[in-house]
Length: 198
Image (cartoon, rainbow, N blue to C red; front, side, top):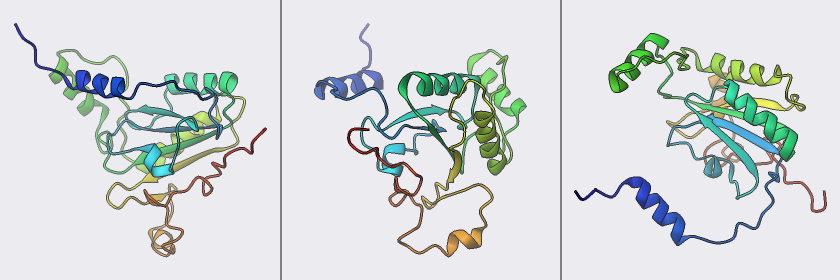
């Protein structure tokens, strides 16, 4: 029985068409990890103007500092030299405004099985970002916990702001300093490229 080509097949075909040696160091040049949501609208490379090899990007549903995220951060710091963490959550997240019961019920309806762990539903976006930042800062397996910062991407207009930042302050930014999808620069968030030879 013939099978319909999958999107996975199409993606693999794209990769094969672009084959070539990946001649770069495994250590991220900006020594930074970005933790963000798996939402398909969020492209950290576009948002931050990133080039291949500059940062580690960790993604999960809700941009939560889960045990597996902390595990990956510990490996990133100890083995690959990162020293800073940027947490980027976003508005209109699928987990925002849900309850654990609602998410668990949806998963059970889709799969026939009830999840035996928290799914990460949350009601307050600012608080969720704060909790992820604090969980990272409190992780004893991380050697570098001072430079951990949280931001929120507003998917309606592409702006990026810190949790709790007043709307008035966001509105009074000049166009040249607006932290948006195309304007959020590496230098704004201390994502400076190390000098050659460092």
